[in-house]
View 1 (cartoon, rainbow, N blue to C red):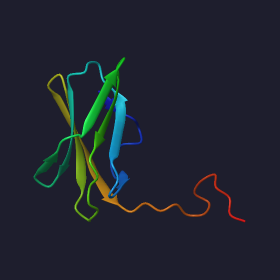
View 2 (view 1 turned 45 degrees about the horizontal axis):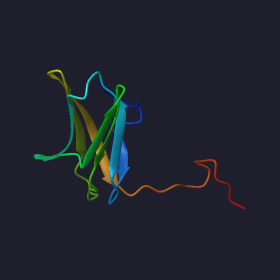
View 3 (view 1 turned 45 degrees about the vertical axis):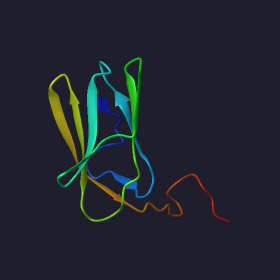
View 4 (view 1 turned 135 degrees about the vertical axis):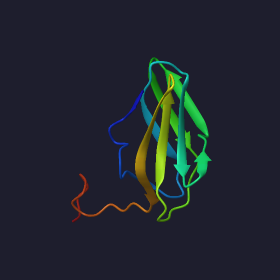
Length: 100
């Protein structure tokens, strides 16, 4: 099982918005959770087809306490973190957008 390369240590996701994670797994019997301190957050929905999956978590509050992603498939577990939840801003020059 593996997540898309986007989801790695120090990843930042938007507070107040659903978080979608995707990647590949060998079977639909895998688990993904978000962890914040001692709290484990279950996905709101998940989809698996032809070895690819997408899992969506409910919106989270922003803050300074880090989260982590817990992955498990066939008895093999991995934790990716820390990741953070906060506000994302797009600055001029950071995309293909133009300012006149």
